[in-house]
Image 1 (tube, rainbow, N blue to C red):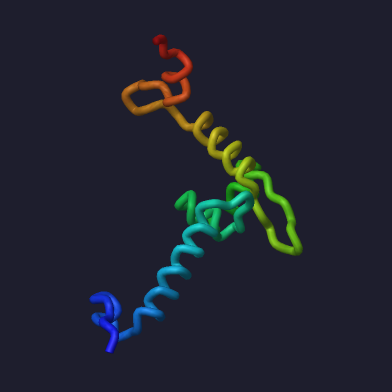
Image 2 (cartoon, rainbow, N blue to C red):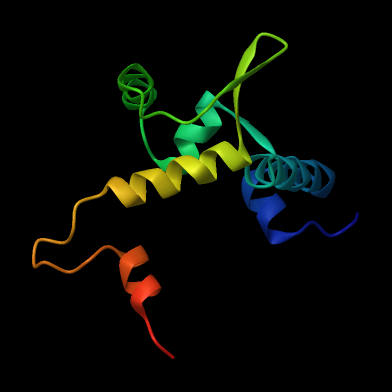
Length: 110
């Protein structure tokens, strides 16, 4: 009888099933992290905002640019980056009067 890994044995599954689960998780991780375009759900998860917040931002004109792909609303990597930069620029300065990070980096001398 072949020896099972501890993880497989502890979960009552075979090594083959464990390997398939690991491969599936790796594919899912790769799909969520290496995207040229994201669904609304993925965008919200990556930016830790709710769908409601995102749609409120769309209504106020502060949301990222979107595109329709086969009936799905998608946000490109470039649009997400542009949106993040705009949000950072619009953020107020720190309570203690410290300038936002972009201003510090722009004024830094080497």
